[in-house]
Amino acid sequence: MTHQEKCCAKKGLSWLYETFWGFPTRILKRPFKGFDAMKFEKKGSYLFAFFVLILESLISIMNFVYRGFLINHSDIYHVNSLYLALTVLFPVALFVLGNWCVTTLMNGKGKLGEIFMTIMYAMFPMCLLQLVALFLSNVLTLDEMTFVYAIETIGVILLLAYGFIGLVVVHEYGFGQSIGAIILTIIAMMILVFILMLIFALVADVWDFFTIITKELMLKYF
Image (cartoon, one colour):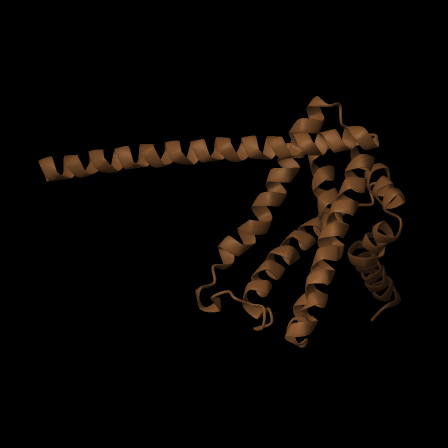
């Protein structure tokens, strides 16, 4: 290997380390400065954001299948991987879109991509703790499963805490305005779900209508 190739390999490893561990842990240690660097210094990575999204989707599937049998009451022989992945993908997409819609009307400074990256970086510690909890669920006794639930709860708390800090920084809001934006985001999510339900119902009715028409024509002319 030539000197130039060694330098390229070293730079590649350095980039991978910084992207997938260096900067994410920097946000964990100093969230305000970390999210500030993500927004104004463009330190965030969409590659890492999608990595976390895929990782959390896989963890959702693994929790269904490989969670310790003492606390796993799922029917692992009838697993629907697509459905389990959507339980992660759909809420994330819904929150990002809802928050963007609300904050756009409230003069928020965050872009759609920045909101998405913020939520994914905030989700990173929860993913790590969920993996730890998944492992412990297979080695601890039933009386010790409290530790598993505690670790999972801490992960959710960290997601909410880092997500809130990230949104404060990204939108350049104050504390009160951020709380209001999150409440309105939840309302916007419910409205979006209602609209989607109406669309799916309409599509289903149209599909049924054309199916009936097609059957009638087939019976009459064929």
